[in-house]
Amino acid sequence: MNKNKIIAVISILFCLGFTSCFNDLNTMPLDDNQIVSEEVYSTTDGYAGMLAKCYGSMILTGQKGGDGGDGDLQGANEGYSGYVRLLFYLQELNTDNFLMPSSSNGLRKMLNLSWDASNAPVVTWTYQRLYMSIAYCNEVLRECTEDKLKKRGLWDKMSGEYASYRAEARFIRAYCYATLCDLFGNVPYIDENTGVKEIPVQWQRKQIFEFAESELKAIDADLKAPHRNEYGRIDQVAAWFLLSRMYLNAQTWIGENRYTDALAYAKKVINEGGYPLAPDYRHIFLADNDQCSEIIWPLCQDGQKAQSSAGTNFYVKAFVNGPMNELYKTGVGSRGWGNVRAKATLVDAFDSDDVLFDKTDVWGNQKKDKRAQFMTALPNQKKETYDNKGAMTSTFTCGYGYIKWRNVTKENQLPTQGEAYTSINFPMFRTGEAYLIAAEAILRGAQGGSMADALNYVNEIRERAYMSGRYAKSGVRSDVSGDITASQLTLDFILAERQRELASELVRRTDLIRFGKFTKGKNWDWKAAQQQGADVDDKYILFPIPETELTNNPTLKQNENY
Image (cartoon, rainbow, N blue to C red; front, side, top):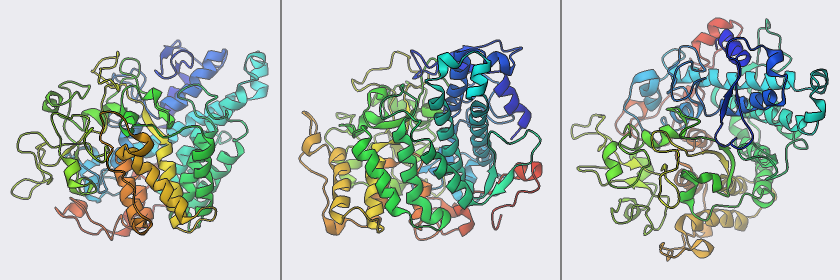
């Protein structure tokens, strides 16, 4: 990470408003020539802006918007280096879900599982962006203290909010450290007390895990109660959810069985969180998903006020090409890039008769499983991701399109912000995953739940996907329940169900590792640069510490075998 760049970003703030449009991350620039810390923190808006910058770092890419230059990361391609686009490369492209034939910025290395510490810029940018977000959070924690608020004459105005501000910054920081723990293992630790000239100490993976865990528990009382915060800001439920996800992965991350804890926190999300499953799965990924009941932590995207080629703009445009807009309303017109396709393993996770796209049923209302959203209707389109000579190709008809994300409303209308950039909020955390966490934890031996409970959790997800039972709706097929029997409920079924439910939601690599099927035991298109896939070295379970970071901090120890 370029330290001077980070300091400059913090010092020359573009404050983002919380009021009428935290959802839109509405920018309100301060004096971008001579702002210093005391000016930024002289008003309540300055504090709100800095906290919003912590949130915005997860979805925005730079200081101007719309890929307009002055990107957050020095030397990085601004469009490629947005956070959720980067995580797609690290969590989805190297799995059994998606293909991108591009070789730029290390993407072919991601696809083939052949990266190292110097040949994949997207790995470096992910590492840097997470630490950039940590730096923003540390800045809030340094400046948002009772003592400093009193000295600046802001205590009376902010005394009721400052504890929540601090708790939210600590949550985002804990999320970043949990993600670093997942992706990189042993990483440097930096907090609000780390001096500018200090060389960060590399903590063991277990220390990083335990720090994130302790922070999430410590802030519970200071986070807003469920649904008591402004839209786009987290509340207690987000911390419960993150803990449940961390505990589910604790066995593979730090060698500890924490499945009982995973179940306990997943149940809190389901039973106490107040974020019920959306009645229609497809509504979670649309331009009006700010109305979706189950999204716990949305990363807010707006087609006019929060533009970038990353974020959900990528999840629509990369997944469609121009001609597809003639078959259904993509919400981006002819602007599709057409460079992401579903791998055969994702397509085969669904019943074959649910896969085909029907031009007379563009929403898939007559499918059994409404999650089977693929584009198969382009001329000469086929499921295989290679041409008739067995070679990878950029031709979009080699492989099916995946059309889960649409920049339209439930009424199939364009958002008022238009089609140049998307206005879909990215669902970082949602309740549907908590159901699957609870079921998996029970199957792995968690105390506090029965196999009948696990079956009920899975069948609730499947009934919603099939829109049967209480999810039935007029005009939508609901004659197949989707329910499975107890004998069908296995860990392998859970892994497949997570693929059907969560594809493109940035957890697939982590899932495959937890099930022991990432490097070996399961193969897919172009793994190890083979058309049908092949096993790879176990070192790929972790990404390498970027070479640039090792140069800047010689005390860091590289992950094994890199």
